[in-house]
Image 1 (spheres, rainbow, N blue to C red):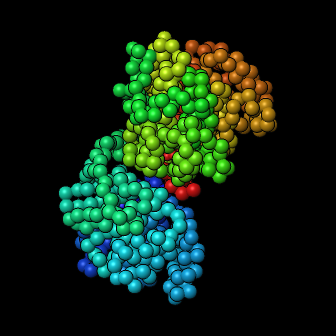
Image 2 (cartoon, rainbow, N blue to C red; image 1 turned 180 degrees about the vertical axis):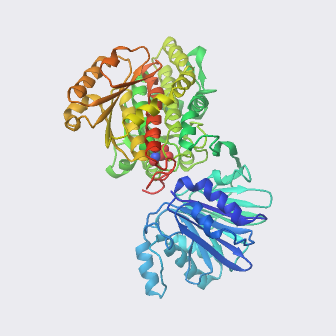
Length: 610
Ligand code: M6R
């Protein structure tokens, strides 16, 4: 949520900042803005809308500047508007800040500042922080100290960049609960919410920790805690390449990411799956292997799509390892005093590694003494760093707001965890080998599905009239039904619900009529005949059925209006295949309807607010 970027060095700051904002735009696109120092002036441009709208107002201005900060917004406090756009200034007009996060006590702080004679021009919580920093600066005449003092009064979360005319050779950065990465170039620094805004200039980065600040000037930088204790940070290397941030010939990032899946799931198991032994090697879990083996219970916590993959993981771990598993919405987890035991293992699953609810669940579980592990995509992200150990899914940057390749990679990693734990327990080598041999066939099978994506496009065209769509599946395909419905909702704005197919008769069946298409994920498994009965129940009420079925299943054609076939695999691995046509279906619906697929309304990629 919200992207921030700062630059100091020899380049034209405006170019670096605008480039950075374009990379970060997937984090929020309600407004964009920047501040630079040029010829001893603090100049700010900001505009409601996308970075392209900001570009129209700075075009041709040609300010010479080598220092600046910028922001792309996902609105929380105050509607999306020019005035509420960041950067925000203090009352002197000499300090400018950009902020990602929420200042929870901004109301109280604002009242107190108004009493002291300060004024406000926006509805944002961020302006309160800017004015507070300015108020301290009046007393201290020291920017770093003023930021530190202001932050000690603040309750909430922030990724913050501060620029001041009085100290024009430095940017002050600080974080608590919102990510911040410092890119170390040759005589230049780029500070941003994530590495995507940095990689064009350098691959060397430092991930700031919570409650840490960086004071960055052209030739050096210092890091310290907000209460002024010096810190030492390891320099990391960004693992992905610039090309991974481009669309690579696809019309949308989402479509590109869907097509990357044969390769990304391979990345998830490469070097980990020992196929000829039916085993798995998970270096990230080496130090917690005994705890895992002895766990009485495993809890997955996540949000959105990651929560759906957790559900698949639940079924897998129970099937292969015989361990009880619970799946918790991270957003509910800490608010209901969950009963946790020290020998519980809690896995936090997150693509971004920054989701505020999931991070809060991590803290809650840690506080209760559990072993907390991560299954995360973004290297160096908060959840990756706050968990005791974990596994990266290695899906590469996911830019489309609708998560696709992260889902299949998470499910892949969960299959590895289930196999790993299963083999530590009672799963035979023969079964392990069978699963492994099916896993390595998956990339090819996804390719076979992608090769028929035109068929899905035709299905989307046929049902484009629909205002509501129901997604039904059983067993391993129930979470896929949820995921298919979520994909459709978020990018096409068509209302969709996912249900376990057998639950339909307990309520949703009342919705069925000839205008209500129902997507059944009806692949061949032990409960196939049951789902056929559910399909018949829908047909009997005039509903239209789109079936995702297993190749070779000719019977289903009698029951469904449209069938899309996927290759056969083990039921536990089916979600990795059956979700792909549903991702494409959502994509083509949204495209037919002319929706902004990579940046759907009201959403942002990583939800760093509660
Ligand atoms: O980064 P995370 O996996 O923690 O994100 C969780 C959800 O916000 C995310 O999956 C969201 O539901 C996606 N937009 C779904 O496509």
